[in-house]
Length: 410
Image 1 (cartoon, one colour):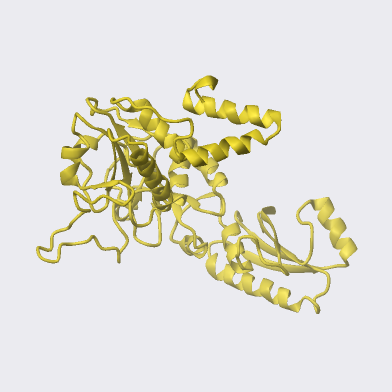
Image 2 (image 1 turned 180 degrees about the vertical axis):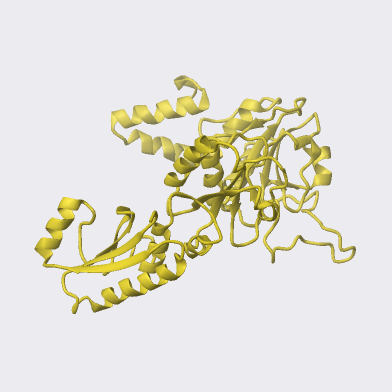
């Protein structure tokens, strides 16, 4: 029988390790309830520490006892699970076994759905055409699954039979294959239309999901779009709402008037207020950039933000692929047409300021460390001066590379 599961425990003393033995028995019982599609067996082995150590060394399956292993068709899955210590991932034995028991890539069926649900993990679902050769695609999916093992399950299923499921995940095209992430909170996260389903593209899709950078086509229930109390109409941020740092909040209505003004250099951040950790992380950096531009009297640049859930994406930005957030794009004066200049690098105030300087139509100068005040820059030079000669050289080489200045200009 393909898919035979064995939960195997190694002990040195059943009496002293009775609690751990009970955990093994409980996990095996739960696994049998979850995996009605395949035979599930459990066994416990007891031996002296010396014999256990030698056995583990020869098989290279485990390094300690008491521990548990999960074998599928004789192959060890996910290494060893310590029975007397806290698991590094915070899982109990039953949860660990549930995750280890599902294949890296498998077909999702009615018979094994409970097994995948028991993992308590999101799923990347591939809806394929059953009559076509999907071997190359499955190879790509297998690689994606191995990369994100333990964080997400990867499954495939018959797209012809599961049209209703596809619609519930935001997949409305009749073409196959199609891909989406199945979450527990109702978000619709379909793989981008027109994108090639390569290992790299699917891996980025999964990484963006795990990093909370994907934009759902439908919000989870319980998250409401703000409405005007008088009219009941959905509202976005006020058109003239400027934060204390100098960042301008845009709405769909004000975007054309402000961001697309041919006289202005505008940096736009597309973000989501709810459920986007990277968006939240960027706030302090973005505000710092606006603050430093203001202190340096660079008044030719407007820093702005557009929340894309409360606001409809402006038609001028329809060419921008919204696969992950936040997105930073530069709209220089007299150059407001696609392809747009997107920021793609390590987010830091200094990097953002030099990015704006490079692409702005209205030229302006920046000091070597524009994110630092004059006092902070003096302190930086003082610290660098106290470093070993090779570290001093490296620090200045980095600064020269980032700024494009000569050593005499520093």
